[in-house]
Image (cartoon, rainbow, N blue to C red; front, side):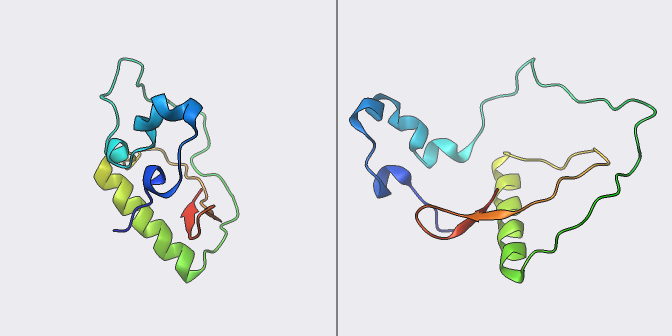
Length: 103
């Protein structure tokens, strides 16, 4: 897995040097522990079971990028499989340093 480490690739402006820890890839490998504020969103009993929406097809490259993104972020614990009957569409955008990423 090739990762982009902004600390190595781009200098951090002097006024932000005290916060450089937040830019380290190593620090981004886990989330803080769950807190009391974490809570499920309960849908009303009369909520629609399905939402009729248009599916936008992905290119094969975008599809592969999304699969890798999901696999990596599931492994890190950043995302998890939800229980909601609803889903959100996905798109990808170009990164400033090249390549693309889901957005």
